[in-house]
Length: 312
Image 1: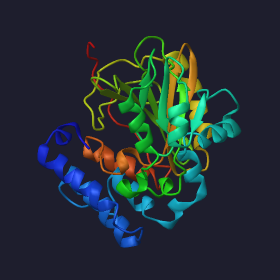
Image 2: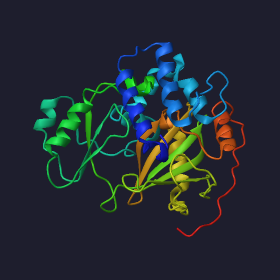
Image 3: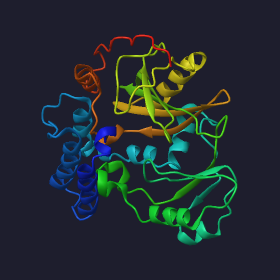
Image 4: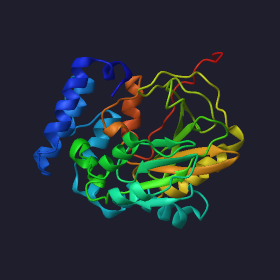
């Protein structure tokens, strides 16, 4: 959901209503189509054209609703535990963050002694995280982890890759060069080839986002969040980033490879099939249509204008 709409009380209420109703809508062609269209409508005030898609999220939604999207490989790369095996197979060991523990039950959450400076995340959901600093998680945080084990992300967003995932909590060390989480580096790959890079700054605070070409030039392109207007901060690592993303994206028509860079070392965080659950468009819209066509045609030329230099 866009920043502006996420603060609208009417939209927030409608979103909560949908979250409740969606749990009772069956996994069927009409049910998945209806829930997906409802969520798209809340952001765009129109329905997605999945029969004749034009924009990037419409192309993704058409695939999301297809039988092909239920292939086991999409489940495997969506599970935050299993994806590490996939990354090791494609790119070698050492490219993911260490796993400290996998917790599967409420009692395991209660009994586990969380190391200081660690993070807890559900392996079967998206966007949820708890940062553990010096003390053990609070009772509220423990209850939240337990609630994750009762949640099926498919019911709300209808991304089929989440439907059959086993609920687990993964514990990892907190990696950073300071007290704040590192920047999120997201490489958009089409037909196995990186095409552009998104960097999220301050994701857990003032969330800003810039988009760059493969040479690290900032583009006149936005996606949900306001731009940070920063120069590409990791130009000495750009070739290593793209090589890693290319290895992981091979054989996928679209895949977003999510990375962190900490103390000169790249780590794969997640592999993403449907950014924003197929509801947000790139701006300007004519470039969103170009990006949409890239999902079907690897020969489409991607040549957005470079942004004007701005003091950050």
